[in-house]
Image (cartoon, rainbow, N blue to C red):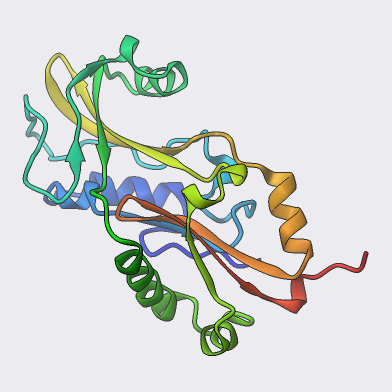
Length: 214
């Protein structure tokens, strides 16, 4: 199985990235992707309950108001008790007492497809069947929301403690449907899943090497 991540191939690497003394964009501009979300090597829906990114945003500096300088959309500062219970539990474990939900702005289907094509050509060329699918039109690009039955969505938060921004968290919904994923894979279909700059995707193409005899 092949796992790919433009940002990192392990939770340790992701942690180092977010901990680095960089601008806020180092936290909010992120890509998480995997060809096989049940691979132990990938940052994937199979471990979507795990937080993938936890750390200080700016070393020695904190903000008392949600950042507004990047391309992401931020909701209001919200007490953990007003968030979904599963999310609140994860954020509370990180020491937060409030959070701001971070989302990417809406983009058109054409813009989404163009973004995924560019990413795919850079990172998936050479994988079994990808170039052929790109050439013959069998490459299928979808948003993760187009296949809700697979449970591939993610959520992102800025973390706050005592009114100060102290870090960020990015994790899956915890609803990944492993059985359905394996059923699709056994039909000879490669499934690329992940999130690019806040946009969850599901890209597929034929790969006969994955097919299993009935």
